[in-house]
Image (cartoon, rainbow, N blue to C red):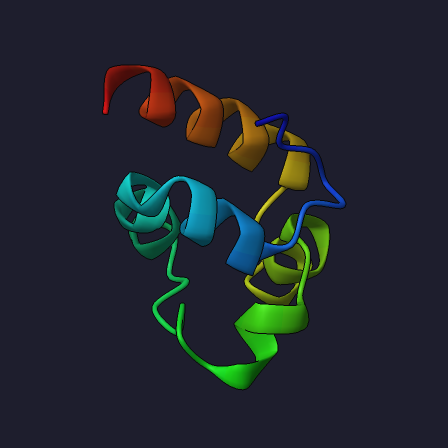
Length: 66
């Protein structure tokens, strides 16, 4: 699965549930909330004050080791 800024958080969690701790590590604790299901990575990062490009690097590295 290719993960980009436009990828929905729900898609990531559905296809790679092991990614949840990466989201939680930067303060995204509401993985099951209504916002998360329709929010893409860029939107979620902006809402949490996280640089989307840096988070994508972190997430991809996290998934390689998970």
